[in-house]
Image 1 (tube, rainbow, N blue to C red):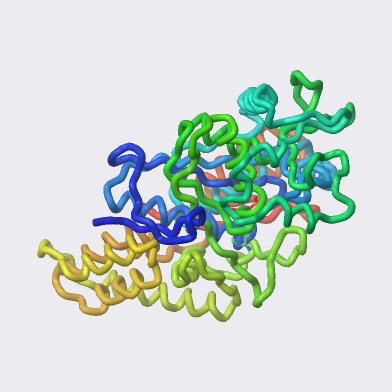
Image 2 (image 1 turned 90 degrees about the vertical axis):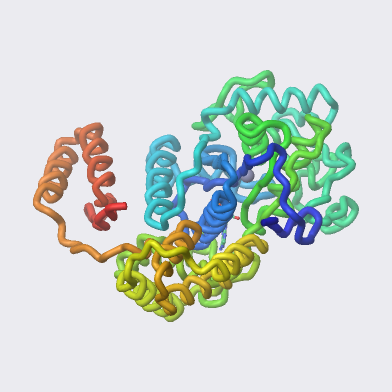
Length: 460
Ligand code: AMP
Ligand code: ZN
């Protein structure tokens, strides 16, 4: 059955065709690990997980690559301000590497709690500096980049004829609309940093042909995507906020180097809003998944909530809506668990309807209505059919709530970790933290002491 996706590049739904038969490469813009991911960020990874699962349901072998941005993402997407990692590291009095490890571990845990399948390749920007330098060198050689002394290397957007093709932005309009305080040494206000010179006291820096410095945020994604998926890739995803700058710039750098169309399908997830307003890390009005768990919610209630809105629609988060999602999910699971097992062939019409829905640009809200139908009609074969649907939806229909009381052996591990911290044995305390995490106990060290949350892993 054909699959259609809305391609942000053509602004229409297109029939999906992979470059290699039966295989799909997807690049997912990953998190900047300077803080906890908020539930808006997590909505965008639920979307990329659904995309992957839909392709797998259609028997594609999917290679999903996700980056971890642990350097180079400045406070403003337009290359201004300080590196978010460096700024956060000063605030927390930790090295950027310690921070990156802490927040990326937390991020991975949240993916797991949301039943988001782990991308096959997860790559850190700081492990790929050489690839980025090589790309910047190529852009310099080809005349697409120029140096501003004492500042860095910039991509010259006017040299790239297709600049703006994703967002529809025109260079003249960008120039007219540029802020007055834009870096005046740039040849065009939309020119963006590929490499920044680092002053001696800058914590994150690497040697380069242009002296010590660090990469721009956009070049990270181009370098890693090309390294792992090749010069032409099937699908690239991210949130809608990335269309006008980050993804436009990724296209410019990559296509300037290869001279070929880089990404065939660009898919963008809409924003989650909170109480009808914008949520962002900088506004500090964001909820994390840990906040929801602290309030006693099942993480998959949040997944269920997200699944009920199409990925290209904004979703307004309220606790009333989350309550509704939690109740609905519980009913769905209870209904499914009561169904009799059967070897009977499932209802072909319902399977077909579900399949058409998910293949129509991920119409998951419609697909969920078919899941309810399967659970409600309860005919022989429905249980198995619903379980098949759940391979795409990932709601863990077989989940049975377990006691959240901390078993004795885990209590001991927590005590040992407290002891290790008291003795400042950080290596041991980190090791124990990992052991606890593997068993579902998430430990957080705050200035008021250590707190933990326990989510017994399911048996699946
Ligand atoms: P960041 O860690 O800021 O680079 O963001 C990670 C991902 O979350 C990106 O794909 C963003 O587009 C996406 N994102 C950021 N804020 C929201 C939001 N409120 N709702 C949905 N996605 C978001
Ligand atoms: Zn990216």
